[in-house]
Length: 317
Length: 277
Image (cartoon, rainbow over all chains, first blue to last red; front, side, top):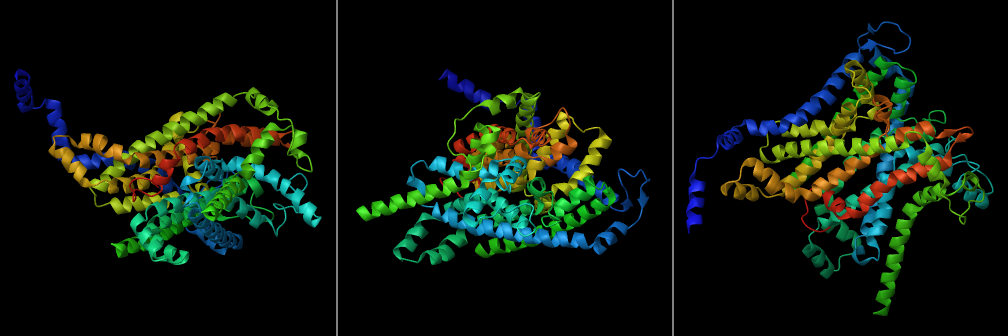
C-alpha cells in the first residue's frame, strides 16, 4: 500500500529539467530536422562537394601529367565528347551490356526463383541457397582474376572441354568475337542469384489465400504468374531490376580486371573508358565532363523509372 | 502416392543441381587453393589430388596480410554500422514526419548511386588529396559509409513504412518519449531490414576495389587491392595465391549469408511482407 502511494507521488512529480528539455525539443519541429542532419552532412560532404568540383573541372582543360596550367575552355570538353566517335560507341556498348545482363538475369532469376518456391522441405535447403548466393558475395576483383584462368586458352578448364569436344582452343577473352559474351556470362553468373533472391522475396508478398484460390480454380502456371503473383510481387521485382540496372550500368572492376576493355575496345563500357581517360590518360577535365554527362543520364533514367514505379503503385491502391 | 514421392525426389534433385551449377566455379577456386601450381595448371584438369595447405601457409607468410585482413574487417564493419545508424534516423524521419523534401532526397540518393564509381572517383580523389584525407582511416570509413547509405535508407524506409503508426501512438500515449518510440518500439520491428541492409552493404564494401585503390593507401589497404598488387609472380599471375586469398576472404560473408538467410529474404521485400518468406 505504502509502496503504491510513493509510486503515485513519483509519477505526479514534475519531470527533471533534462527530461523537460528533451520533451520540448521533441515537440518542436526541430526534432525531425535533427534526424536528417547526419544524412545531409554525408550527402553534402561526400556527394555535393565532389560533384560541384567535378562540374567545375569539366570546363577546364586540365591534365595531371603534362604540367600545362589548367585553362578555362568552356564547353570545349563537352563538344569534344560529342564529336568523339569512340565515346559514342562506348555508350552504345554500355546500353547493350545493361540490356543483355539485366534482361537475362531477370528472366533466369525469376524462373529459378519460381523453381525454388516450393522448396521449403528440400533437405539441406539452407546450404543449397547459400551455395546459390555465393557468386554475388565474391569480390569482383578476385572473381575476374580467377575467371581469366578458367577462360585461359591453354590452361583453362573450359578450353579443356572445348578442346575435347571441338578439337580447338578458343581465347575467350582475347578473341573479338567471344570477349563480350564471355564477360557478360560472368556477370550473369554473379548476379542471377540476386534476382533469385528478389523473386523469392516477391513470392513471399503473395497472400496464401489467393494462391489457394488459384489452386482451386486450376489456373495454368503462366496465368497464375500473370494474374496472381505479378500484381503482388511487381513492386519488389521492379525495385530489384532497378538496383540491378544501376549496378550493371556502373560495373567496372569485373570487366577491367578480365579484359581491360579489350580486345580492341570490344568490352569497353562507358565506365571503363572513363577510367582509361582519367587514370591512364590523366585528362581530368575531359573525364569530368564525361562524368557530368553520366550523372545526367543517371538522373534522367532514375526519374523516369521512379515515375513509372509510382504510377504503378498508385494504380494498385 | 508413390509417384508423388518420386516426383518430389526428382524436384529436389533438380534444385540441388541448380545450386551445384552456381557453386561450381567457386568450388573450382577452392580446389585451386588446395592444389600445387602444377596441379592447378595441369591439362587435363585434375579432379583427384592430394590436397595441401601450402598455399595458405604461403598466404599468411606474406608481410602485412593480417593487417590487410584486419583493415578489411574494421573498415567495412564500422562504415556499414555508421551508415545503418544514419540511415535509420533518416528513414524514420522520412517515414514518420514526411518533410517536404522526402521524395527529392530519396531520389537524389538513388540516382547518385547510379553514377559509375569511375565518374565520381576523379572528383573524390582530388577532394581527398586537397583536404589531406587520403589514406586516413576516417576518410576511408566515412566514404564507405556514404557508399552504403542510399541502399540502407531505401530498404529501411520500406520497413518503417510497414510498421503501423498505431505502435507509435500507443508508445506516446503511454508516456514514452519520441526517442523511446523510435528505438524501443519501431527499431525492434524492423530488425530484418537492418540485418538485410547490413549484409548487403557489407558485401559491397567488403569487396570494393576502386576507391580503396585510389583514396586509400599503405595504411588503409583492404584485401581486394592487396590481391591485385600481389597477384603477379615472376611468371605471370600467381594463380594458387589468388585462389587461396579468395577462399579465405569469402568465408565471413558465406557464414553471414548462411546464418542470416532468413533476414536476407525478408529484407529484400522492402518491408512489404510481414513474417516468413
